[in-house]
Length: 118
Length: 118
Image 1 (cartoon, one colour):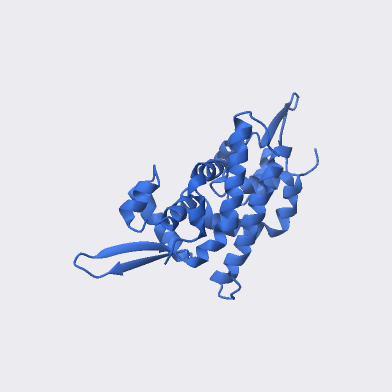
Image 2: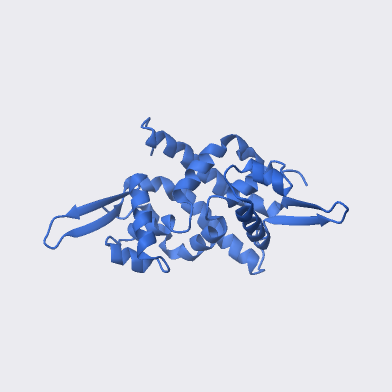
């Protein structure tokens, strides 16, 4: 069997690796979606991403901040209020999210044996 | 700041989650690219994905087999020859890979401060 189309990617493996460094793991994109749908406080975000632990969420939010995808704001109190918001730059991830979503839909159909995969 | 476009995804979070379950982590897509570019034997694949351990590669290959993206073939010997090949179904991941690659290119430019993001 000949190599698939995926072979075209060889020349740009570093870019693929860069992107995967940012969005790898199953949490970051789900956290971004939670933020984008209005969850701003740590506990709200935690509740809207089922299965995530506080420790992992804290680490992921810090990573997202470093990648300039999320901003953390501290409003001096009392009480001190910490909020997170997704930055407009994160919109550039939309094509990635759409492609993943389409593939997920299709894959579910295939694995469930109802056809329609490529 | 209003929610970004990402909010549109809320209704299809399960599909996004399905896709992330399959391609999450930084290894699976890189392994598929290695296979697609002609690496068929375990040690060849291992060498072409820098940084991966034998244990992780074995687990990832098993996952990819279960998702019907990769086929493992054993040719009775001696010597026994085990080869892996990417299945045509994996081509359906091309849009995901292309989207990630484009984003990775753009993100590298942004983080390096040479503009053109968004």
